[in-house]
Image (tube, rainbow, N blue to C red):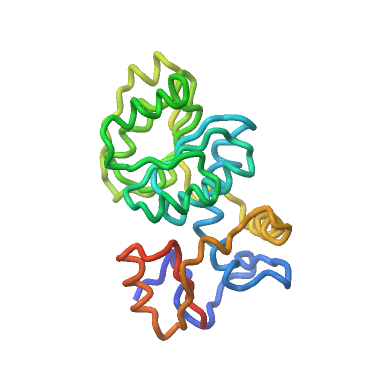
Length: 236
């Protein structure tokens, strides 16, 4: 069996190189540490490290799963306004608004590009794609204002192709940034995010849909397939 990223997962103990072990505060709950180890760092890093979103910028978030909701938290920290979330699931749209999205739009609604342009006076400063689907990636550049930035934080299948209008990018000075793991440096970013949580500035508990013992790993995978909650955390 090839473990996730070659590191191992869903186990009571994992052996890693010393350089891959990051010290976090003793008072950090293990469940929160598990979230910081992947989706939270990806989402917050997409905002603070990849895009470097300034205060007052307008932003759109495509996809309100674990990464998308973490992007919303990062945009809240950065002071972005408005924050427009887009998702097919009404439960996740409601969660996005509870975490700080100004408004949450149905991903199946017609004319989403026109709606976003109207809400942002011609286009958003930033659009984050947190799904990894070519159909949503293709909608990102048209939602941007001139000089705006699209950030691809969702992973597509290897070899996937999206159709982008290169004239629009060149003529309007728009950019597309790739975002792998939030452009993070774990030794720096894990403790920083942990401190933000412990200070009350990051409500990461809201991202946990439920916890399960390690013996229920298969049920947890079913939670994932059924989009039950945002994250199911396994407790060894």
